[in-house]
Length: 214
Image (cartoon, rainbow, N blue to C red; front, side):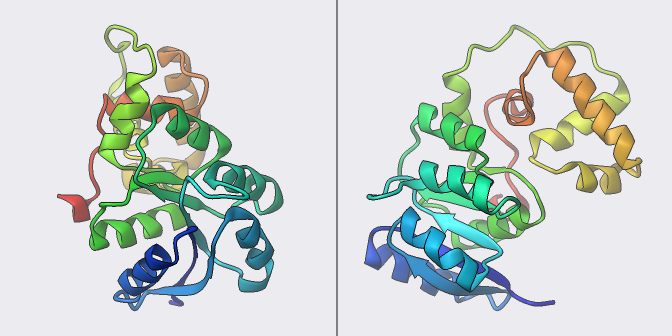
């Protein structure tokens, strides 16, 4: 299996070097390039063909939000994982609404970071639990959960962990269409506008941590 190709985007050279060194400890990950802002990253993506973009939220010229928005249009399917020291709830919601694959704080461990890169490559949504709490604190929550069937509850538990439909189907031994219909039913029952909002709601303020974070 070929290594995961990662493009690092951060306006601080020392942080780019540090991330390159950290990711270099994992033989299954290859840092294919660095960019100092989102605009430079967009210019490099066609040439470097990364599998995942790891970007800072706050940058000059074109910030993380702008990069996520433009990647969604110009490079659909390319996951952008946002790594930052900020945990601003409004920024979190804007990034996720724009299509960011995840949002992590910069004090994340090496194992958790490499695990997150693999998860977003597989289509998962990755949120640091502290980020999830910040996002939820800015959203008015309804009191109590609607009644769920056993099947809906099983799917809901995995949606809360950021798993895509294909992985949920494989985990629960269900048809992909069944999972899709169940997620649609959950959106209606919880009265949430999209899957990101549903995942945050189901997480109850803190998404379960991947095994590397325990």
